[in-house]
Image 1 (cartoon, rainbow, N blue to C red):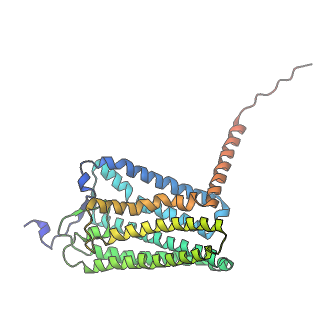
Image 2: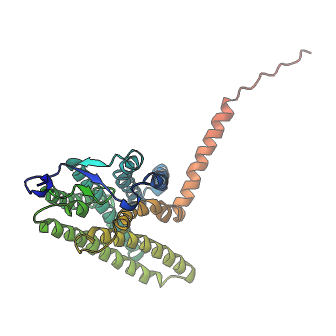
Amino acid sequence: MEPWQGRNFSHSSFVFLGFPELSMHLRLLWLPFAVSYGCVLLGNFLLVYVIKNLESLHSPMYLLISALCLVDVLVVTAIVPRMLVGFLVELDEISLAGCLLQMFVAHFLSSLESTLLLAMALDRYVAICRPLHYSDIINSSMMVKLCVFALLRSGSIMLTLVALAGSLSFCHSNVILHCYCDHMALVSLACGDTQRSNAMGLAVIGCFVGMDISLIFFSYVKILQAVLRTPDGDRWKAFHTCGTHLMVMMCFYLVGSVTFLSHNLHIPIPTTANTFMGLAYILLPATVNPIIYGVRTKEIRNGFYKVFKIKANDIVAVKVSSIKVSPVVKESL
């Protein structure tokens, strides 16, 4: 009998196989994912840089956008660099401890992103629907409470999720059908009773998708009701902005829910398609958020021009001041 056929044996290391149909051509995937990762770093760090260097953008809404950018960079960095190395040199093995750590970091940061999206929606709701009370409701005290709530909620739930996964024995295959340590991709390899892990996975969806998306949807409904009372020009602009935000959020929540629930609900999704959706769930929001919340926001767009115009003027001034001017030799009369 092979060792993995007995339940007294448990694998201590695992191998990623996210694209089985492309296993002989993984290096072809390196370039598009490397470009995507570069775009994530460039776009998000530029946006944070602009917000940091303009005092006029140091308001709660823009601080939330900065936090969203940093979370996006961290969650992508927790997954993509190791995956890119694996594509090039076939370094696709990971220890159980490393897998659980990556699982916690990825899911913890993704849940923080959900909380930030909710906070941004509520911030816009208060600003548009209750503008006279905005400074009383959205203040530094509220921001601190939000941070504590986000960290406690995400930390406690994801620690429980990972602890339940780590308590399982893995006596079946040690091949994870994904490019990173996704919760259900690992749990599906366990032998024995996995009902508690499955139930916790459903609880995570209920907490972060069910609750957050309901509050976000409620906020935008109220915002759109307020917008209907504005002039036609402003109305179209607000509809366009809210619609774009909602589409990006729906992609984030919908794709994330499908990948998270595919194992629980036994949805027959091909491994390659499921892996791609799992990566899109991480990469797509991180790539488009700097555009949706940055370039398409007038204040940030103007701030971008202002910051880099100042920097360009400073560079020109330094170059001019460094030019040595030859002394003028006066002719003797």
